[in-house]
Image (tube, rainbow over all chains, first blue to last red; front, side, top):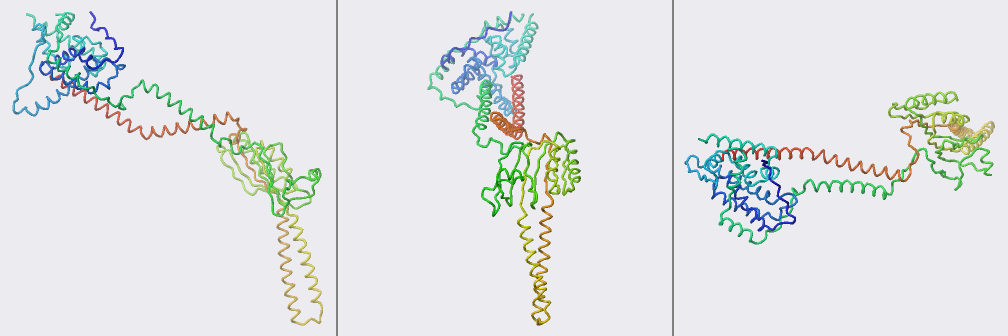
Length: 173
Length: 360
């Protein structure tokens, strides 16, 4: 089985934003859900992603990439901004022992073992699984979204899958 | 569970956005269209540079060509070796259209008996004979001779040859300036007896290729004649006064007066004789300024118009290149610093992102 999904055809003409948002909303939400493991947060970040994308939609050049990759890049930046802010906030509130707002949720439809194994991965590993496996992005597009080389993306995916396999094997009775 | 099984399960459980989120995003998309974003410099990516760079290079080439074509002063000002225009300097009192001084036979051929007091003539081609002093007349003769030799060794030989030739003809060397063989030039000031100037010029010309010569002849005969007449007059007056002083009936006052006049006349006669000697000395020796240069320094024959245009265009291109190099040298360190800072910032950002994602 190959992990490389067929590359989506580039749009012949420029999509309008509403069409693009409708077409790729699930992808953005799924990616953010895997990344954050928090349904509410993923929804918030998805909304923020599309707000940002709407503001800069005129800048999007279809000749330089597919709108799906472009939207996922914005989603990742949005999530990283949130992670940074969250890290600062947690640092400030560390002494006060503030409750962790992370509310781990399982993706619907996964076996409990797989969900648990996924939870054991880092966010970086989960996001590459989300992009390459769940959303079936090709290696080049996924690497562009992650801001790394295609080779590094492939390595990261292999490592994540290996860890998932190990965890699934360990959990097996 | 194997990787393919994991993949199947993960894809089967692909998340679907809740309806509330879908409505929210639809509301965002239904808002007023976003204003057009002004393109920034960062949008200038490689594909555009691929167009811009050839266009810039073509523009530089075209500019160089156009400037070279329309530039009014793209004719070389004076190319040694080319025939310079014949010019005769007018001296005060000379005929308005005085011909260049000529040899006796030439003067006879032209049917002219006029000898100009001063004549300058420039000769550029080796086969064009330099004018010679008129025999029988006192003339100041000055010649500038430019000779091209093959290389530095030939330059040294020619310098020594010129000195020995002049000495053999009874002349002498006033000054010698010999630059190193690398710079390829030597300058000599020579004086030769006027009656041997033709021989001297011939022997100097044989040292190499004559690429330029200029001769100036100042006629001194009139001055000499005037001085001779003055001497005759002075001698006559001195003789007359001496005869008067021989009269014993002269009063003492008158005698003293005449003796004083005779002394003044004798002083004037002495000074006039000295002047005549000086002028005669000037006429006896001709001065030759000899410039020796290697063929590398000597200019080539005048290039064609197309060649000159190409040369100009190449020079302008070289200037453009030098300007570009200057800009690169000045801005290069800043560009390198900026690139290093950008690289460091990107590395730091990625490292921070990795830490964030590893913790989450």
